[in-house]
Image (tube, rainbow, N blue to C red; front, side, top):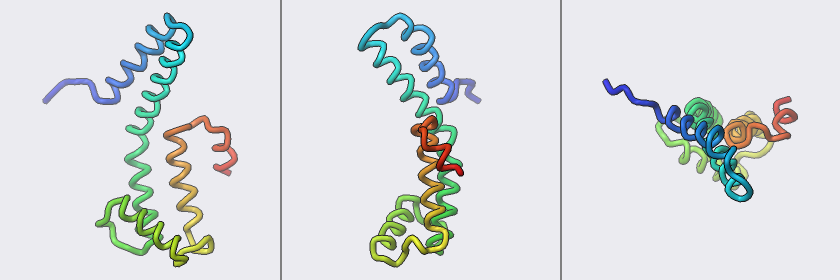
Length: 124
């Protein structure tokens, strides 16, 4: 068995180097780019941690909403959902549609921008 750092551990090590060693010694534009890099790595770490569960929940929501089986990809299921909305087959009145869209959007925002000011309001 290989005893190596996980992808998350490697990313965390680079992020820590940027935050604790490099960034404090930088000024101006270089310091800004160090913060951007650190934020990008934080997003990747959240994605690695949260995406599997979010995709499982999204797939479950899509298959329930579309009343279909689970053998399609999430992309295929989302294309089907989009087609049904565009054709008018599914509307705002379709049971579960708004809840599904809100849940999947919030899951993505929690990965991309967890400190987004509207999240607290949206969770109510």
